[in-house]
Length: 526
Image 1 (cartoon, helix red, strand yellow):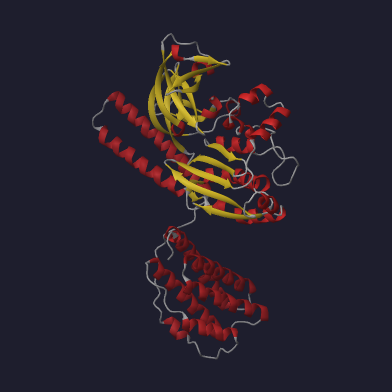
Image 2 (tube, one colour):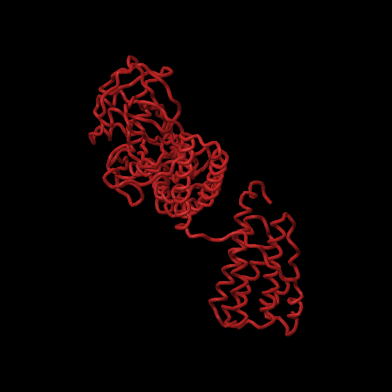
């Protein structure tokens, strides 16, 4: 097996098991009524899929036999020939070979020889099969065993319900911990500790059951890129890496559309025509990469092209024309700030409206969708060299680690994923620049948001402020709170439509003492 293919072995074996089960039941039905074309099609579908999967894993003998079975079935169907008992017996013998072969490769053994079966299948295709050449008795001698069921399909609604129950169990466990801390019942210590461990184990297993490889979304893109490139008369070499990186299905459901837009953007606006690329000394074929990697508790997805790139001067010109920025602001803006402008609503550098991606919407919707997942997106681009979009996404949305803080008499939760550090600053350290409060930390100007101001609470007399330093898309921001309570894993609940409209609120949660608390949206706050 080729290096790196081992990662896909479990997925291959799982699908092979399902295909063999379907193949077996279809063969049994086919034996009862060999005239049924739907069964011929189902058997051909199973062996075709098994052939493709096995070939991609390097199991050539399984693939060759599957291919030969598929050819034989197609010939029988096209010629309108009803399968004889001898032909059906050969098909069962082929099924036995496929089942045994999959078992052998699953335990690291070599595939068995398939030459005798290939010869029999050739006789079927040449219509040279003779009465009694394959005896049913030979098949009957094969020992039959019952395999243990190792995997089942579960409706996603059941997994959602399980996750809700895990969340309730987590809240109840924290409630017991708080009660025991208050009443100090020594006999409960061990039981509560065990309950906490069991809750953590259940949470981990349910979370793992909801995880799906990003390849399930990625695999739809090669055909899309191919069609778009042909439509735009461009040559594109599209590659994908990290398709086995796993995300919670709720996150996976939401990233498909943003990725479609970013990839379309790369084809339409990024990659130049072969003629233009040749003029600038580039290969006629442009490159687009879709890469997924794992980083701590986040997944990083990159969309990279070697196209024309975003021209900061052109962005500046369009932004001034559309009153997004003033000429004075344009003169003082850094390249990084200019590259943030395409994410603003109604901005588009396309000089024509196209059906691909130049409708004046897109990157702002992508940003909103990604940030709605508690993720972030940033863009890096060089004129003539290309563009890279980097998406940072949480692995799961159901239960997340949060930092509990208090402001006034209320408690709030901030997702820990975006928190870099906690510092204490003096009020005299705060400066005012263009109406905004900032402070200097490690020789860097950091904007400051006070939660007391956000919630219209009077300022405290204390000379010092507790500030949480957050970082998203490499941008730091300080959030001032009254105090820190600690870290907790919390289940996030949706809020009412009224609260959804309030900027800075991502959801709600129930704390260990049974009282609710709001989960704050860092992007909305800053």
